[in-house]
Image (cartoon, rainbow, N blue to C red):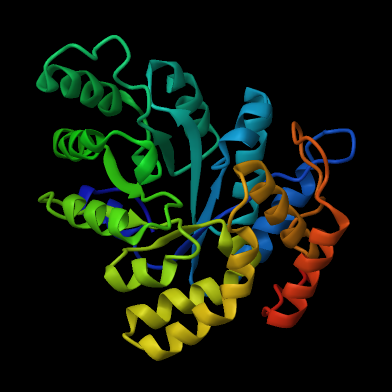
Length: 322
C-alpha cells in the first residue's frame, strides 16, 4: 500500500479504517514513548486496520514540542507493518507548517492532515482564483500528500466547502478529506456529494460517532475514527458490513456501540477527550489517562459510568502482544 501514483493515493485510504490515537503521558506530564509503539502494534494486528492517525486532537498536539511530535511519529511507525499507513496532523494549512511536514516526511509518515481554517489570511480581499492559486502552490510544494480536515458544518463558512473543492481540482497533492466529527447528516451528505463531483479519485473519511452508520451507508470511502481507538474490532466490522451490503449486520453493530457513543454526547471537546482517555485506558489501549494541559479530572460518577458501559457492551478485546 503506497502513495506512488495519483489514482492509488485515494484508493489506499479506502480499504478499511484509520485509527486516531491519543498520546499517553505520565503523572508528571512526560510522554510515555514505549507504550506508543506497543499500542500501535496491538492495533496493527486487527483485520481492517489500514493504519494510524496521530495528533488529530488539536488541543493535545499544541502541548507537544516539535521534537516530541517527531518522536511520536517514529515510535508509532515502529509498531506498524510496512504496508500500513501513518497519517500526521500538522494543524492549520499555512507556510508555517512546512517545517513540520518535512519532519513528518523524515520520520516516515505517509501523509499529513491539515485544517484550512486560516489559509486565506492576507488574501481575504483577493479574487477566488488568486486565493486558490496561492493555496495550490503551497500544497504542491509540500513533500507529502494532503488530507484536508473539514470543520463541523455549523462552524465554517458555507463558501469554504466550494473553495476546498476548487483547491482539490487545482492541486494533485490533495488526496482526501477528513469529513469531521459532525453528527449532522445533512451537512455530511452535502459535503460528500459535492466532493465526489470532482473528476478524480479523492477519499472521503468520516470521523463522526453518532452518524457513522449513516455516513458509511451514504458511501464513505474509509473511516478516520477516534471511536476505533476504543472499539477497533467493532468499527472495522461495521465498515466491512456496509461494504458488503450487510446492512442488518451493520445496524446491529451500530446499535451495540450506541451506549458508548451516547457517553460522548453533550460534552465539550476537553471532556470528550477525557472520556476517550478513560475508556481507552480501561480497554488496555492507552497506558495512562493523564494528559498535558487538561484541567480537572473526570468525576468518579462519570468514570464509573464509562466502565459499566464498556462492561455491558462487551467489546472484543485487543490481544496482548506475545
